[in-house]
Length: 148
Image (cartoon, rainbow, N blue to C red; front, side, top):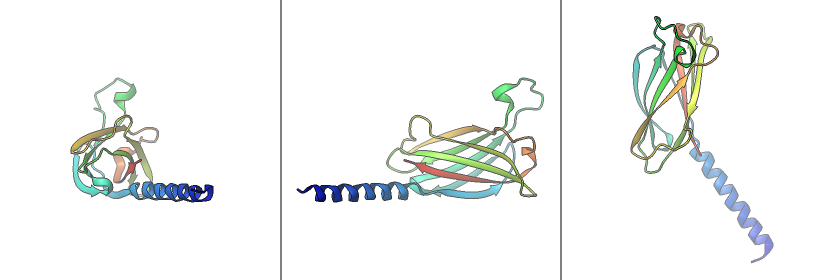
């Protein structure tokens, strides 16, 4: 086999691999009504054999005086893998108020091990940085992307 033929074959294989990874990274994004301390049952099918089961915004208790990690609002996102192979995901959430101002964000996803087939996982993400007016939120947008 000539060097040119091997080079063309390698280029074709690289292009196919890149195209396959781009097709796999299909983004799910949708907006919902923001309701703190309420589990929103979503049950939306997503690309890659995944399902967004629920989203919950958890606010710290007002009578808690302790600081640190436990005093920040958190978002719990439940995702199921309905596919036949393990999957990694990235999750991003943005909350806006009635005036369209961004009042909170959170992001996270798979850290170490992928979500196995026929399993469910809850990703718990802190709402860092801008969050003073998070309770005034009216809409949140969530995006979930299967990761390579």
